[in-house]
Amino acid sequence: MEDVQNEMKLSQLINHTHVARYLCSFVVGTKLWALQPLMHYGSCADIMHSAQPFRNGFKEPVISIILRDIVSGLQYLHSLGFVHRSVRAKHFLIHEDGIVKLSGLRSVVSMIEDGARVKALHGHFTGTVDNICWLAPELLSQDLSGYSFQSDVYSVGIAALELATGEAPFAGLPVTEIMMLKLRGHPPVLMKKDDGEKDGQISTHLSKVIDLCVDPDPSRRPSPAKLLNTSLLKVRKKVAPNTLKDLLLPVVPLDTSKLNVAETGLESMLEALNTTTTEIIWT
Image (cartoon, rainbow, N blue to C red; front, side, top):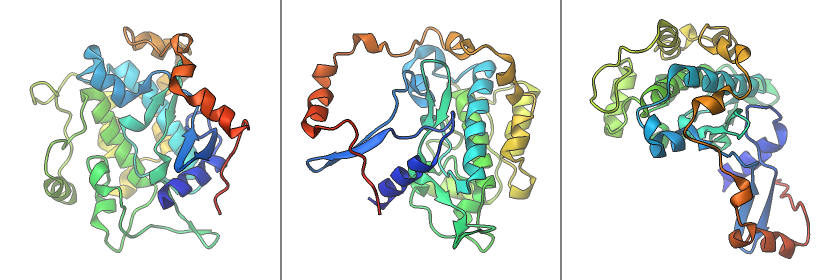
C-alpha cells in the first residue's frame, strides 16, 4: 500500500507531456480506483506481444520516436530529483495522437533527503525480481557506491534492445544467472527473438546509443540531455505528429466511439459516488 500512496503523491507533483499521471483516485467499498487518461494503443510491450508485424520488435524509425519521448520524460523526472527504476517497454504508453508517455511511477524513488539532494541511493529495491533484466549492475550490487540517475540510463539501453527485438536481453534466464552476468560486466547483445542469432541489421546510430547506455561504469553513461542530442533521438524534432501512428500500421488506436460505457459499470459507479472528483489526499 505504501508504494501505491507514493505513486499517487508523485502523480500530483508531475506535469510533463511525456510522463503519465493520474487524473484522480477514489475508494468504492474496499477497492481503490485510480484513473489515468486513456492511452489508445496500450503499451509498447502490448503491441509487440499481440501484433504479429511487431513480434520481433519495431523498425528503427519507431524506436527513435519512442525513445525520444521517453528520454524527455525521464529527463524531467531527474530534474525533480527522482530515479524511475523501471524503464521498460511495458511502461511506454502510446496515445492516439502518437505521443509516448512514461508510466510505472510506483517504482520511483527520490534522491532528495532532508531537503538536500544526495549523491547516491542505497538499500534494497523491492521490484528487483520483476525488473532485473532492465536494472543496472550498480543497483543490483547494493555496495557502498550505491546508484543514482545513471541507473535509469542503463535501463534505457536495455529498453532499446527490447524494442528492437521484441524481448529484453537476458529474458528467460534464472534470476541468479542474470544477476551474475550483470555484476561481471557481461554486455547485453542485440539478438533476434526468433532464432537467437546476433542481429547485425541495426544502424551505427542505434548501436552507439545502446553501447553508451549499458556501459558498466555509470560515470561513462550519457545524461538524458546528451542522449536527446544524439543522431538517433533528434529524429522526433524532424517528423510530423502523425508519423508514429503511420509507422504502427496495421495497428490502430482503440476506437472509443465503439465502447459501451454502460457495460463497464464505471458510469453507474461514478453516479453512486455523487461527485465528479473524489481525490484521495494521502498524509
